[in-house]
Image (cartoon, rainbow, N blue to C red; front, side, top):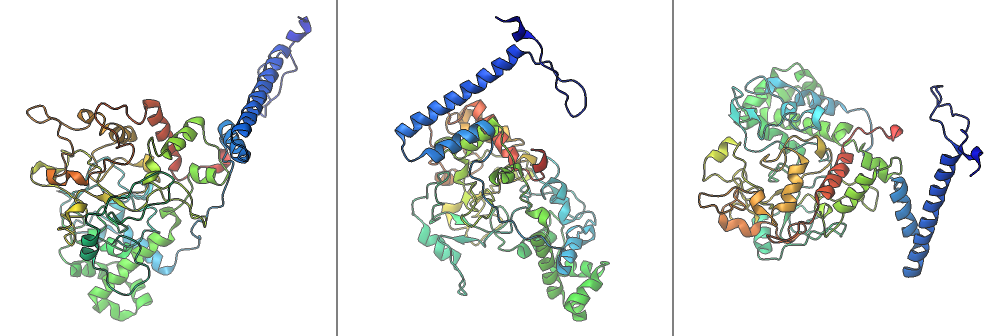
Length: 483
């Protein structure tokens, strides 16, 4: 070979001014050969695809571009909520949200359990939070995040009721749905009409329909802010530094009307959550990838593929991942309810009572559907946005990281002995956080739960790591300029 082929090419000077690594002509030729080989392989692949699937070349090109570059070959325009300065009512709501004086202890506010530093969820890893007059009372469930609730519909059962002034009888609807076969949850398919499964609402059991209704709950809950009556809340509001703002906005007579004062205060808290962009920022890496402004790594792309694979993880069966037809960004929940059969969490003080069971929609914290036992064990599907920031998972906080969560989905049916404890006789106590008579409510038909003991799990360990890598792209605050 010509000796000149090994001669060093002139060194390059990066932005810092220091010489870069020396590139020989031989290594340069090798790089060119590898690039040419990649082009040839891609061309052959495209040619073969064209022969087998004529007329589908654009999709094939897009798939190859996505695989090689990590870019979204079909970017979309996302319709985010409009940004504007907060209204006077929303600013008042912000004051209330952070006001510790409204609690019986004088040390707890809405932000204590819904920290803006942690996507409006708790900033600690306790399975439940402590409250009460002396901050010594344990809660029953981990507070969910308050983010991405701006499109949450009121609680309902069955098809959308639409705009109607006729009060909905949930018990009647539930009775009509009894015995109807459960809708199949399949990733990327059109969401099935929830003939049996409830939808919408706030809290883990959907017992509040609006942000305003949700806000008053913790103020009078004995294990949270612990005011004994709504009148106690009104009295505390009259002592605040912002009471004059109430009088200016709603008239001076509001000071003498406790129920109206509380109603307007909770309305203000709701307006704060609706207007402040931090509650629905849509600034994740995935959002920017959808818009063509960021690139996903190979692991993240593979994780997205598995997330949307109806036969593998099937996460998108409940955590919808596609923008709507009119460009609304996905909020990664179908807002429906599922009974997953997560194991009992012995760290929750209430669970030390053997006969105590938290059964979600049918009780104990809502009682209007207590007799509709087909819903026992069902809890609201939460958004997966900012899921990588969470410290505890599921309605009972039994898991503390995403690997544990994914192992539960992967092994619950194939290796239940790895998920649930054994009783004194050595028998695996499957679905041990739900009374046996309601075990039939647990989802055992949707992937990855459509497997039996001894079957190969739906996902490998590497699959799980890649899905977790993708879920980390759902965290807000991504710098699109640095992608």
